[in-house]
Image (cartoon, rainbow over all chains, first blue to last red; front, side, top):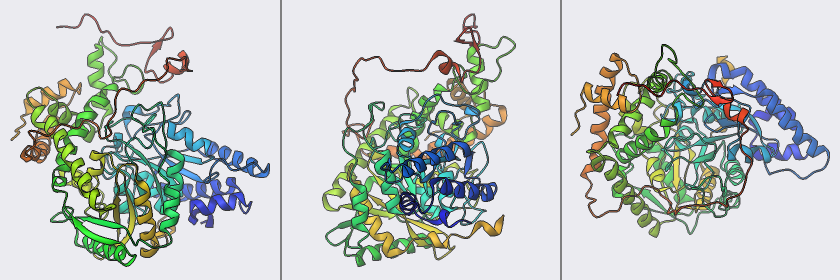
Amino acid sequence: MSEYTHLTAAELAAKIQAKEVSAVEVAQAHLDRIGAIDGTVHAFLHVDTQGALSAAKAVDEDVAAGRPPASPLAGVPLALKDVFTMSGLPTTCGSKMLEGWVPPYDATVTRKLLEAGIVILGKTNMDEFAMGSSTENSAYGVTRNPWDLDRVPGGSGGGSSASLAAFEAPLAIGTDTGGSVRQPASVTGTVGVKPTYGGVSRYGLVAFSSSLDQGGPCARNVLDAALLHEIIGGYDPLDSTSIDAPVPPVVAAAREGMAGDLSGMRIGVVKEFAGEWYQPGVTAAFDQAVATLRSLGAEVVEVSCPHFDYAMPAYYLIAPSEASSNLARFDAMRYGLRVGDENGNSAEQVMALTREAGFGAEVKRRIMVGTYALSSGYYDAYYGQAQKVRTLISQDFAKAFENVDVLVSPTTPTTAFKIGERVDDPVAMYRSDLCTIPANLAGTPAMSVPAGLSGDDGLPVGLQVMAPALREQRMYKVAAAFEVAAGSLVNKVPSLEVVR
Amino acid sequence: MPNISRDEVAHLARLARLAVTDDELDMFAGQLDVILQSVASVGEVAAEDIPPTSHAVPLTNVFRDDLVRPGLTQQQALSGAPAAEDGRFRVPRILGEEA
């Protein structure tokens, strides 16, 4: 394999600007790597060889002409989750419903990546419409975790995180509605960030649960994630929930954190994130991480967020309710699949036949749970009550952040589980999101950074760092300092050469 | 405590425009029951006086200037249509359905 697939995004960008390597060579090295191993990993649903090489060529022309780089990541390859539109390439969201659909417009995130000179390699696999924690709900087959090919890469953004761990891309984009960036990052030993809600435009992001969905950067290290965060973040008039505020200075914060000094910072350990569902090896790695944070000079205290115990039930009412409404758009009329348009079937019959054929089991389950929770007679007890719990969770965060700068927890209660282990037990699958959901409900930023390997199975564990809204710089500083002290997992990923 | 019958699942599927099969009705009846029981614990929280949150970020209506902007051409808009005719979306019959 090429040395270029194992460099950081920041290193690659610097080498391209210094003419030590061309962007085309870097893109080709990653395309070759994808060609060699993606038959095994299956991180990608579509690979855009021509588009990637022509984007790289444009960067090389800028370099040759002495023009300043379009961004600090110009020429660096990236894997885009197949939930963002990009004109000219298919967007499937992992669903048969959108098989073959080629959107006629770019998502704002896509446009910003292209304008930054980032080389989009292709679109990555995901749980159908981002509903799931294992990428097993994709209609196009499972993605395998590069750490252990019999295990899931997490989800819903398993393709994006697996592409990083497999050295198929140094950067990726995910979306996080209940943990779909952070949980895959945790179980693949990579970095994943859910920005403040409204911090990254949702325009062109196919909606699952609109009050929770948030796009974010994925990388193999904290600085790369920060560099990508500043490129994709910012106000977008095309997204009416976009926050009209500057992107927090996360790159400066990551660089500051890399100095390895957290003195003066107060860090809270959320005591509710422990108990019967937590794997002993994960708990042990987390305790070690807390000790590391202390050794970096941080003051660590225990805090209680009593309503976090109710975050998962609240989420699994709110998200399905919004999904049942959002996915009503797949009506077989204007785009996407159409089934049963024959024998004089009515529009309504065609709609029902199409949705039956086009949606997988988890999507149907969530649509029906949401339909139930929004039904008259049940609305107050379910959806209405969940919205009140959401308020209490935000209040728990606000109270905690009066006393501490950031909160920490394990990112997910277990390491990567076996493919097939939880597919028939939806509630066991939902527990993957126990620690990540509160930040979605409160709209606050959170990220996962590698915290070593679990002693019981040798698989990656993630440390979650959570910050107040629009205070991403705090979590980036803590994560970057922790990363330096804990050591990256980059050189520990099993080489996939042997399994080809 | 919810107790979802097969008939209730069939009703939900009709509301959600999902032509589910008999096998799916059996499967979903059991699964929906387990899921709804597991989320019913939100009812344990004392929240009578708590205002609901629909959205984490306080927002009021957002308006944009009423300016002409580029949009999709007719061809682009129809590019993903399952069926098109005379520059329009062709849809199955919507009238004359049984009440």
